[in-house]
Amino acid sequence: MMRNIAAAAAASFYCSSRRWRGMPCLHTNSTVVVFANNYSAFLHSQPSKPIKSTRTQLEQAARNSPKITTVEDAFNVFDRMLQKRPLPSLVRFTQILTQVAKLKHYLAVISLYNQMGFSLSILGKFFKLGLEPNVLTFNTLINGYLLEHRVAEAAALFHKMMRAGNWKPNVVTFGTLIMGFCMRGNNCAAIQLLRKMEERPCKPDLVAYSTIIDSLCKDTQVVDALNLFSEMISKGIAPNVITYSSLMNGVCKLGEWKEAIRLLNETVSKNIFPDVFTFKVLVDTLCKEGMVVEAEGVVEMMIQRDIEPDMVTYNSLMDGWLLFARRNR
DNA sequence: CTAGGGTTAG
Image 1 (cartoon, helix red, strand yellow):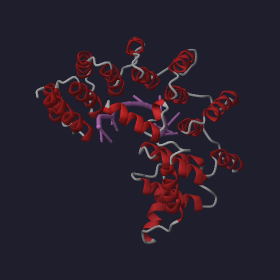
Image 2 (image 1 turned 180 degrees about the vertical axis):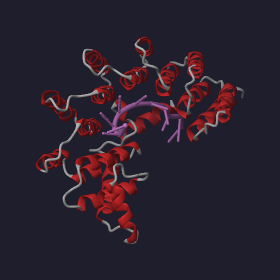
Image 3 (image 1 turned 30 degrees about the vertical axis):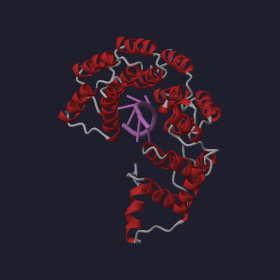
Image 4 (image 1 turned 60 degrees about the vertical axis):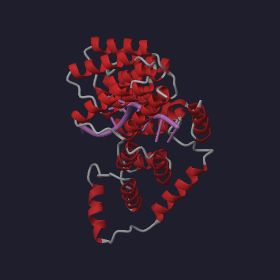
């Protein structure tokens, strides 16, 4: 009951669309505006570091992949890049956006993107300067569009690639589109695309399969996920820790902890190293099933394997003990 | 070679 209330409260604040629960709604949430203003202030503010560091930062930005570990880094580098004439290539901008996206600062990505101007106008400049974008450029753009729910634009770009000839969509393009479908909960379309790939030179790969397997698991269609999983293996595509974590997540959602443990053993037997992601789901499920002692055993295993349990893991344990205490009262 | 995939309580 409490969980339902919390979910309802969360839903009013966060996007209710499936894969976007973690992200504040862009149009309704005023937090976004605050963030955007802060970022904008960031962009227009002078660098806080003295000038002597500017040189090294410029050199860093000029290199192939500027090291960006914080959002602040990104804004600093981005700011300098925007002031450069001629503008640095779109590849440089997309590299930075990608890194910020990896830090999961999606609001920052959108803000930077807006500062950059619409990417297609930059793309226009790109052509005028006689620079040739490559498949990677388009893939990154498609990914950006999908992350912003601008599906039509992503599709248009994809079709442009199909027609163009010199930028034929590759395995990453398809993988990105599959992710786009999965994000919207359209697993059928994702699978159709996977089938389309089989007719092309770029055969479906580990990422394409894992993306769909994960999406099916999120929808508790575990049987379908396992079918895809065995299909993948029969094609000689080896699963990795992400594939197994997704599957474990799927069976755990159904409360099938025994199956989860079986999968964990299978992972280890294949010499794949389980990580925090893999273990955390299992700990949470065991706790919810009232098996807090077993859950502690799993945490023990994590520690033995030098995998640091995080806050969420310990929180699951605490909930587990609370549940245990209430039952024995 | 660079680009696409996994967890998250209250």
